Amino acid sequence: MRQEVLKSQLAKKMKDLDKCVARTKGLSAADKKRVRCNPQTNASRKGCGQCHHYAVRLSPTHQVRNRHASCVSRLKKKLFVHSIQTQLDQARGAIDILRESLQEQSMEIRMLQRENQVRLLRPFHGH
Image 1 (cartoon, one colour):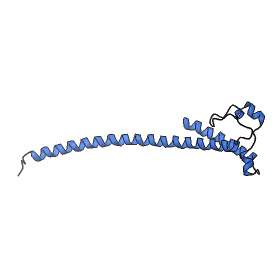
Image 2 (image 1 turned 90 degrees about the vertical axis):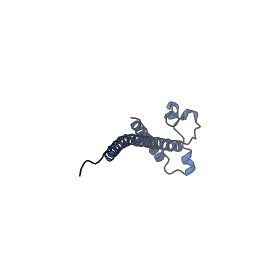
Image 3 (image 1 turned 30 degrees about the horizontal axis):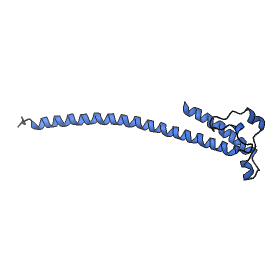
Image 4 (image 1 turned 45 degrees about the vertical axis):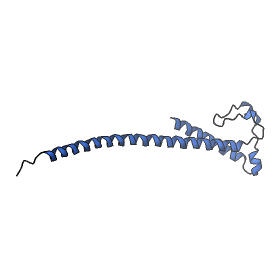
């Protein structure tokens, strides 16, 4: 479930980043970093929850585009970590199964070795 939430957040943030890139198209690199937010948007905005920022508290020339890109990067990282954690959990499960199988096989080998020892110690009753 957590992965689905992260994926939906990532999709939304990537869309926001695309909008921001479209708004800044044609500007110089320095101007792209100083894109102003709409003051009405700032007044009603409470923060995205992922970026840990509040637009109302930031200066009017805050770096919106960079913040969107950073947020997207953090979400991608969280998804990657979640994926790796899932793979680790699956590997641990497979290891547990293999460990149990190894113990069963080791017990069977010991039992067969004991049977062989008993047979070797018995005198041979045939001509």
